[in-house]
Image 1 (tube, helix red, strand yellow):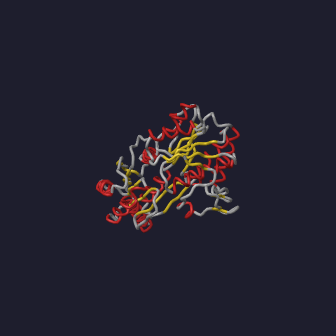
Image 2: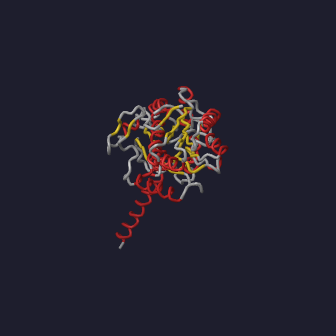
Image 3: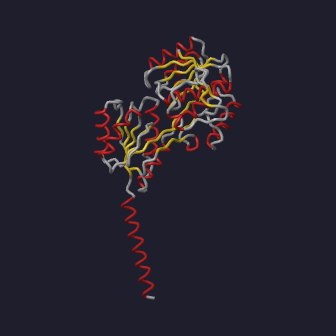
Length: 357
């Protein structure tokens, strides 16, 4: 009996020691964030900030400091900002703009004990991964809706800059428009920047004057939606739900859900299992969404879109499936041929059905 009691005591002691060891390893995580714009931009940076606000409610997070308005492509400024987060003892740092990629890699190399995740880029290291969402899937869905609600077959799109991410989005949107209306055209205006509300407004006005009866965009502000509201033209938001800025014209928006990434990678750090993944998630991981539909969306159209979301989640539908021709009439994908991820990530052309202003 004495031996049995001794065994129980030894067992209890081992359990206690094990719990103590686990507690010492599983310390709360401090996550740092580097932002391109102000958190109040209503667009890209605000979408990341919404996710950060959600993250700090998690018990495994001790703090989540952020730095905003970091100058893009300014090597010294970006590196200094990253170093500032390192000096604040962040366990993992999320740099949330493509423009921060090279400096993130350099600072990661100098601080091997810190985990880094870079948004929208393609470079990795032993302690640096990257992540992004398949927003082109949501762009395709709002294209379906735009093609359906347009009466003239003339749809306007205000685009930011000429990079693969934007080409993907515009092309997916156009494929959706023309799936619903094969004779429709998308009239495309380039701002040349992600955040330039005055220029985005001016171009939206030009598109309306040219006869488009639906507006969509890829901007970090609701400027295009506000023009649509002024002219009673149906519109779609981008990055975040922009309904509040155009309550009488906003149908829905293609929105990011960065929270799934931040929760996933902070949990990996917390569990001591972090590794530099390359994540490109879509509807199947809830990384992209559509904002709630307004009352302007017909019931049958809402049902069509919801069904297509289900197909995207189950990988039963691929947005870029041939036949697809580019804007010069060249066949890019034959019937039933699918674009590969590598091809999507390097997309540098516009599909058939787009007229650039």
